[in-house]
Amino acid sequence: MSADPAYEELHHLVDRLSPGQASRVLRLVQDELADPATEDPVAESPQRHLTIAGIGASGESDISERIEEITAERFNRSV
Image (cartoon, rainbow, N blue to C red; front, side, top):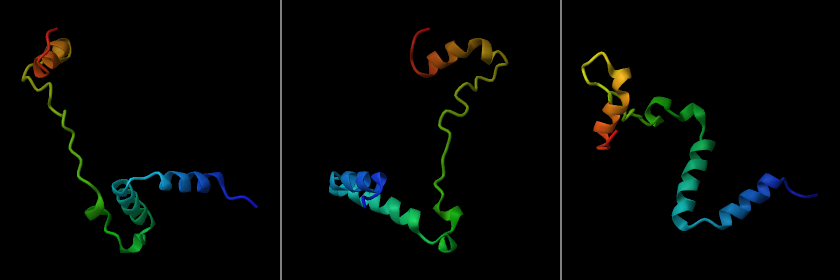
């Protein structure tokens, strides 16, 4: 009887990990297998911030007409 192909592939990949990668993968697997009853989902969820929010905040109403010009200004490019 042969093992599941995913199982074999996982073993092959684990054998190729560097020590740092192995530590990160171990943390991911431990988090995945942790008992959900003991977890606090709010404390564990990372805070993500949309870094491009407000990039076109020019204070003008013609933003959609000037979007290429505005983004070029923000990224120091010429139109």
